[in-house]
Amino acid sequence: MSASPESLYSIPARFRRMENMHIVFWLLKDISWCLFWRELGIAMIIPTLTIAIMISWRTRHIASELAHNLAVAFWISANSFWMISEFLEFDEKIVILGINGKQLSLIPFLAGLLILLNYYLLQRPREVREKHTTTL
Image (tube, rainbow, N blue to C red; front, side, top):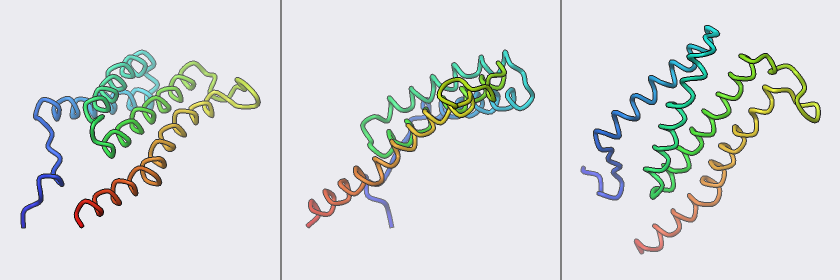
């Protein structure tokens, strides 16, 4: 049984290569964090986050892909801020209102979560209803 054209999501090879490089940069960033290689870890934020934003932009016309890719971009942002807070040793220091540096990374983590909650609680049910009513 073949899938309908609407259920397929095709990725051009040049975008797939970019996504694969994204994984390499992300792993280098996190390995650098683990091994406390400050310069490389901080340098890897730029290509990792840039590609995440490019992937989000490229998929902006597909609500599900956009939501998930934006959540990944916010995850990388949060993860990067947390890494920097450890590298610069303000992760355990109170920064504002009793919140330490590491806890500030909750802001982008929560932004990503809110994007996904919006998609799954509001946007996706609307898409399902619209698809159901157009097939009747």
